[in-house]
Image 1 (tube, rainbow, N blue to C red):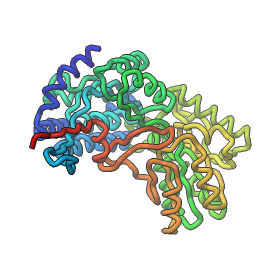
Image 2 (image 1 turned 60 degrees about the vertical axis):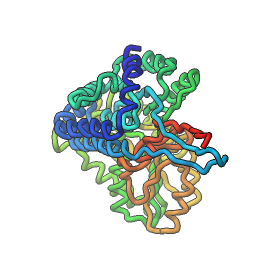
Image 3 (image 1 turned 180 degrees about the vertical axis):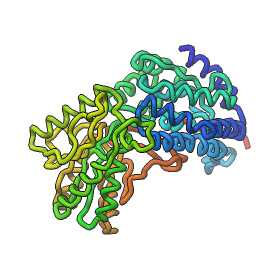
Image 4 (image 1 turned 90 degrees about the horizontal axis):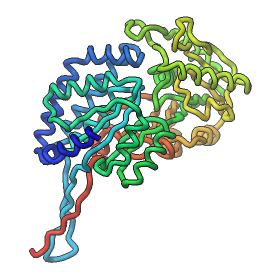
Length: 433
């Protein structure tokens, strides 16, 4: 409540500042993040577990949103529309929506904060932020750097603690006009129901079940490397992670053999070790979920090619795993695995694999590899996903719209579309002319 009060009181002055002033403040925040990127990366690895190389990449990715939206603050344009009266003119103003609440996850504890906060601040909104309880320190470090950058008091507020209590409070508070959330579909639905009581605008980036399709004419080496990047980054704990791998019959065995070989080359260990490519999972419960999904799959006929067990390092380390003979009836294809397991399914035709890929409530990201240009357009258009990578898995950037369809969410983050979420359109009729 105190955080919302502070944000509400700061909103008037912050929203009335010149766009150039807000841009300059955000640019200073960006400069501080870049100046401290190694410290931030080490902190992120220590509290979240991902390899230090990935943590460095995330900090740079997080900073890119602050830089991009510092520039975008100057590009918030209104418009003049053709009037319906001779003695009047029609204007459309774009104004900040108000106090914005952001609830962010543990798997990208820096980037998910700046992807929400930077466009909100650029638009002239103030923010109350609740980071994940597993990773509060990265959020507090970013807030400290914002303070050093002399962001005015009350403009960015961080509250740690009980997610249900804090989320419920902000949903009920009419002073909060926007809620941005990244997390599970189940929690997103709950927040959406709660936000309806005060008719808040919501932007939700929720669960995924990304298909990764390899057609017969694909560059096999490129597809294997793409699968490694899409499946095993952050130990498979990403919302756009390749959750189901579909490989054409004619190349299935060759693909699996090469994939298993590459997976065997991954190095599991302490994230602060420069040689590590796979750190631990986030909690013991995450390990239990992965084991449960694997046991169900094997009981239903799946075969483990490599991995499949907790790692000899113990604790929450798990062996990178490849699974074959996987069917759509198995739970491992219905749920987000959020672990380093690659389940591979055979397919024989384009129509068949499109149907299998779309057979899910989710629609966040999808990937496919193939050289047929006509097929590329057909498949991209038919996949029911908000983002599609063709012969590439590098979807993330500050300049592109990130988000899903179906039960994977509402709204977009990143690009000029991302700042639109934080703006209202006000129609002004100027009469008596």
